[in-house]
Length: 297
Image (cartoon, rainbow, N blue to C red; front, top):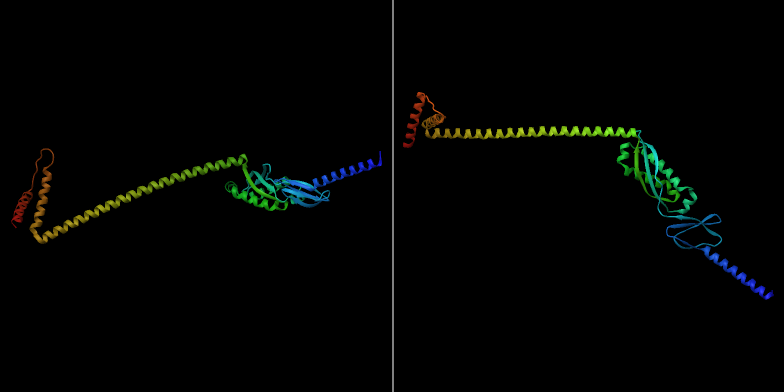
């Protein structure tokens, strides 16, 4: 092979190698990061940078992408842990935690298995929080308990570059003996409430009856007061008549009252014989005389 051809061939090979090297350098220098990920770049085994979404440049052959971390929200598998309440009741709590990685450099270099670490931390926090509450509080204040768990968990996982977005208590299960005891207690409470309601009903009925009697007594008292006022008015009228008309007017009133009584007796049903005393006959005469006298006056 002529020297010129060999030299030309060698130059072409060198250009091809250079082109390949440049291509590889450019390819390794340019990194396109998806929106849902972050890249952790190392240089000689040491943290160099964290690449965000978009086009990024690194030093070829010196820097390398050591970890590709997803920043999407993650959900831990549902876990169950036993806990004992303050009133010594054994419960089984089902929890679920949602989190996302916000600082990949901490997650990569400070914790090996982040899911297992979070699950263990959640179990400890749940046992600790439930141990300070009674069973009724656990059942009725579940939202408050969830908030306490989330806050405690957020303080722990902050060093791991993790943000806890949500923590949920899916269920609180009891053993059969505790369930039976709670059912008996619930039935007893319902019976007590029924008795209280019935007693309150009877009490209300007695109060209403007493109010009715009191109202009737007040009305009777008012009626008696009206009658007393009427009698007083009549007595006053008679007194005025006696004062103005003299004794004859009084005698006239008495005689007319006797006549009215005898008239009522005569209106009885059936045949009857009325025996009048002499004083009654005199009453008719006195009334007639007084009437004539009053007319003449």
